[in-house]
Structures are given as structure tokens and as C-alpha cells.
Image (cartoon, rainbow, N blue to C red; front, side, top):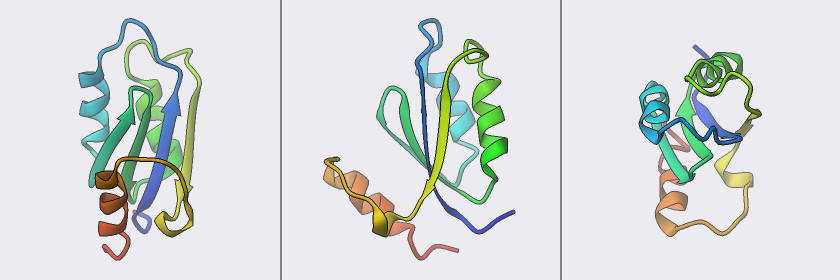
Length: 95
């Protein structure tokens, strides 16, 4: 398993899929949070291709766009709820 880091996952939302199916997949990460229906951040040591395939295997996701990106919590900017920023920085020194 690789060093843990933050991964942003976004995808086009399939109309017939519910959020619980995604939560079941993302719960395999050390930590996950969702800030929009189709935008999630996970803290994981698992490679991107494995996560890409996990999302693709959710029923209804077979033909949807999926994008994953590793990021450093110190090198991001945006307008998010304060609790999200706190969580991002809480895990920055986690092993």
C-alpha cells in the first residue's frame, strides 16, 4: 500500500444510483467526505486505478465519466465549509 494521501473523486451522476452505494465503496478508505453529490474526497493509501475501478463497478457507473486526482491539502484553494478544511489538515501528518 502506498503512502496515504488525499484523493479527489468526481464523476457524472447516474440518475438511478443512490448515495449509499457510493458510501459503501468510499468507506474502504481511511476517511471520506462528500461536499457535493458527485464530488468526494478520500484519504487512502490505495492506488488511483483501484479506486477508479471501484467507482466504475458501482451499478449505473459503467458508462459515466470518472476523474481522480491526488492532492496535497497544503496546495489547494477554494470555498468549502470550515469543517472540510479542518478535516483536510487533520490528516496531513497521519501515517
